Length: 210
Image (cartoon, rainbow, N blue to C red; front, top):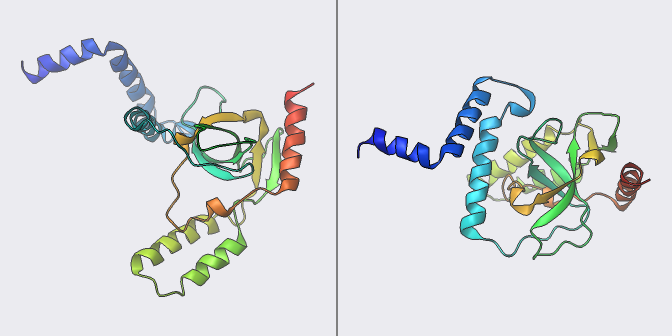
């Protein structure tokens, strides 16, 4: 059997997947912006995530306390559904290592009627100062580059306001949570204040209850 015959046989066997593949190529070739800007990256991540889930079959997961901030791959979704890689606030009350999902509120920098202003919760001068102090230690070049990488990432967010998208609350798989930049990423050290969580709770009640 030559390669052409083998390809035709594979196409027939996976006809629906091949049609989906052609549709994805059409979408990619449109060179659309906004949520489609990283369309191919999103589809590749999606396939990798599914393979990881199938092959690794993880049973235990990291526990995320309520008020934690994570970065999530929301993917490219239909219509106005939340898409892309975004930070999010964990609102699950009793997360455990056995739970594979989290309830989160996505965070955006875009002001909107239903988005709740939460200030610049992603930039921490205290954490920036600690990293800059760490640079003075006797570290190898690799670790110094990692620190600088984390510093640059968060310094870009110094003047960016954040908004909680309470009308886009989602249940996510923990597998869709992005990896940290490196070991010096201070995201795990951030936590939303109890006052702000109470504000979000009240807004959620108003949005989802009578």
